[in-house]
Image (cartoon, rainbow, N blue to C red; front, top):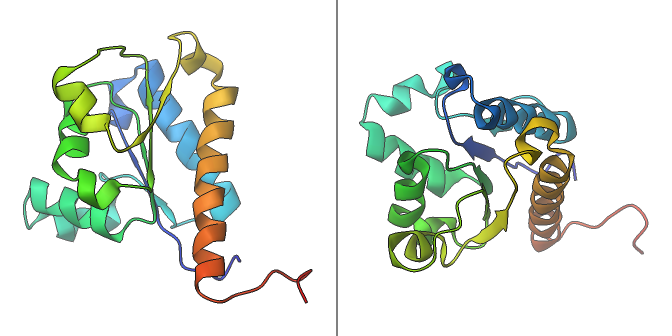
Length: 158
């Protein structure tokens, strides 16, 4: 399964923001990279993706939504929320959103309507064991599904 190509994007506050959510974004990335391998878990801000950004912000985000096998969203600001709404057809079935916002109806409900949403308490951003476990379980499930859909078998299968 480790040889199956699999790319994850972690969208959220810039690492330089210094918020609990931005630190958690980095922790989630590091945790997933440990499981999937370096270079498979990306931030939009990564230097390797700079040429993609030359095409324009929205074009780059759209390309990320299309090529990603999984997306983890931490919507501290409206940016990831807008992206979730704009690209929801491409994010469907492969996106998990961790949010403390509990807004019902309107734009937020529309943006997240087709995505897996996990509400978290503000204090969970500090330790975030549950958030990391859920992000990893979600990504690993998608990776196993991709592995199996390509006709591959686990070692223990006959």
